[in-house]
Amino acid sequence: MSNPSILILPGDGIGPEVMDQVTRIIDWFGAKRDLAFDVSTDLVGGAAYDAHGTPLHDDTMAKAQEVDAVLLGAVGGPKYDDLDFSVKPERGLLRLRKEMDLYANLRPAQCFDALADFSSLKKDIVAGLDIMIVRELTSGVYFGEPRGIFEEGNERVGINTQRYTESEIERAARSAFELAMRRNKKVCSMEKANVMESGILWREVVTKVCEEYPEVELSHMYADNGAMQLVRAPKQFDVIVTDNLFGDILSDCAAMLTGSLGMLPSASLGAPMANGRPKAMYEPVHGSAPDIAGQGKANPIACMLSFAMALRYSFDQGDEAARLEAAIEKVLADGARTGDLMGPEGGTPLSTTEMGDVILAALDASL
Image (cartoon, rainbow, N blue to C red; front, side):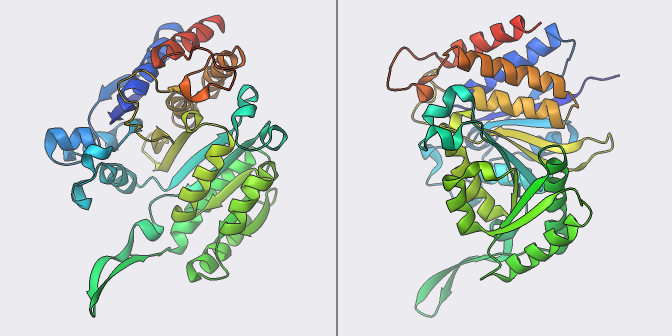
């Protein structure tokens, strides 16, 4: 029986640095927990453009379609700002999402107790926070047609089209309800049904899907109010489901509730493959941070937590995912910090590799 397969795409900026630490974690599970993976590595984003003149080579896309899970670091950087839109690093990421049909983006926002003081909100607002945002990822305004910049009369006009089918909304909603059944059985659907026809359809379809989940409490909220409520009283939410554009905005808002983008993972899931596992890609929410790339300052935890999500959702290893999450929580409680997590009391931050060292030591201690 072959090992589960993982394609690693480190990407740009700090992507390779944080992914090196994830590779150490993967190796640890193989050596210490008899949980081996067949790992391959390839290029995406600016790194792929430098090598191939495209942000995602067709051969890499084919590999991504075949493996059990893709782990991605980050893409982009100022070096590529002047490229044509069609070959910018982010186009490689969007192609992966679209062609793998990764329609449900799971973005947890969890505030570790040791970091509750790092949020810009008061500690009592965020302490114990544990919410999940499900963002529809392959449709909506980022993909709708017509789109582009056109001449209209004596001026240019930029056009993007918000477009959703019932089936696209339905499958994202079902992902949210399935997650809620394993959590606190609450779903809040966010749209703009007051001013957008796509929002009206979104609300109707989500309401209909909810009929299949009578144990789940469903509420609806306009997305602008949702942004306000996330910073007013975030713990009122359990699972939030929303469209591509609003999900992009709301999940970044929720990310900062936890104190650092360097702490937040994500999973993008699609339809089941022949082996029953969903097509999947896992990536940290943070960007490529070119200002600190190559300096050993990056926080690898979000990328490690993305691998924990892969253990849980792609490889049915929930206990091992919890082991890794507990090791991370332990080192944070003990005061381990990278530069992005340093408080006013100061101290000497750990390097990217040193944070990997202490987390591996905590994993050893868990045996």
